[in-house]
Image (spheres, one colour):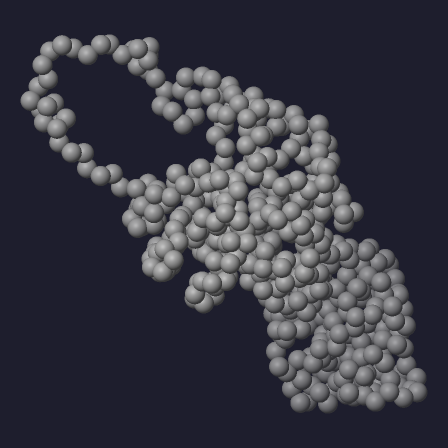
Length: 488
């Protein structure tokens, strides 16, 4: 297994879930962007010490790196990445980063030298900002040195500003009576909360798009929710689990990844099983099947209009009377062509192509392959017209079809190109396709992976069998195969 094959499998330009704090992958949702803006404002216009806390893996280091990226040019950042420093080592680290040559000065003389250098920098319009990572691990004596540094000031302004990043233990450390003088100097408190399930889904999609993925994501909604549960909403764990989940899907040759791969990944990463009680999952599945059978066994079931009385089921025989002239004229007139469903939202061209593709999508063979070449939210579906028409005009005359994910009134619209016997044949066609088509990062996928969800009217025995035909097993996992079909 090569990295290039893995990236090609998912249509990626680089790995999306590395745990290094790359500012290019900064997620502004879940109040992260708002916290960054508030930090920049506090450092620009206010004084005092700022504190940022969050659980291990909540994204503090990423926020710190983003802060470094967006500090104004006149700012001179001093980043203390090692918190386990004695007071003397702390002063020496700051002195080096603001341009003071190291020597054998005492702490008091070094503090004086730092103050003089800060005054000179202040006169040049420079502002020194000390960023302390993992501040919860600082010895009490080093924290006291931080307090003494915060006392350095001109008659009107502080000579340096301090930001403490730490785990919740920092709050406990500062709550002690000995740290009251330092605690009173903290003017702003920020806390990075774990991501909710909805925020986790947005985070995963953001990382995939930042890594070059286009089109429908390979992770199902249920898979993303399971990642959120197992990772407890912590971004570092989310990255580890999502990366292992994609690797599991790649090993199985899948583009539609569900609970099975997440459970395998959680087991490999030593993280909690997102579905720890198999019995609960089984009961839920049985309840869903029983509920579906009940709904579809009663008149007036979901999706059908209720019948007013028995006469609708057993209509009266037609009258032998001759039809009126109006009825005869109505019967002989050609009915007007109805507009394709969702034409007002999607545009008539896309809606018509979607309707024409529905039969092929619904019955796509599990052994066939196709190429995803585009996708769009339904409200932007008209933008797909040019792509479809251009693909239609290719010399090979490879069929172009559309599918829709579930949604209200309709979900995301996807465009697929071709109907191939094998994945290798699909890749060969893609390799031979024009450069403009390959520039959109298309990727090969099983044709059956875009089928609509299996109808609830199927029997409990038939539904798992149909889903199983579209699923690739990975080891022995107790989870029943997920229902096949497109995902929102």
